[in-house]
Image 1 (cartoon, rainbow, N blue to C red):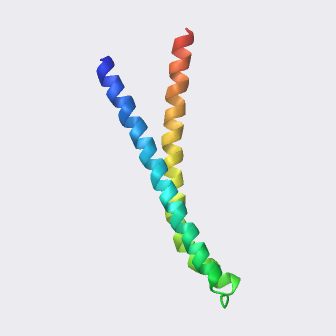
Image 2: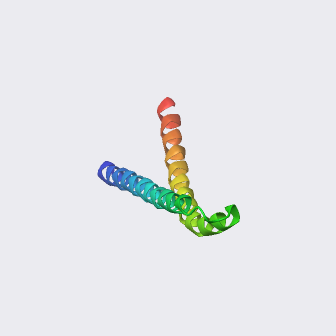
Image 3: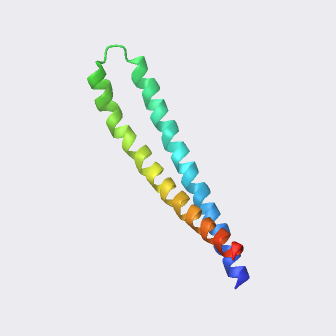
Length: 86
């Protein structure tokens, strides 16, 4: 049973790392898009915003996934600490 729990903990940690990596990748892609837009001096603010809207959605999704994983880990760690205190 301990071996199975350890395997699950390692898998969960890997999943968290993968989610973080995905989020960071999406942020980099968005920042690159912002840099490209910044170079286009002929765009109005509204035009620039329209072009960036589509690029922001993947960042938001990746952040939500990362937050969901983080919330699960926080709850589990809190439960482990509570049972250790008893």
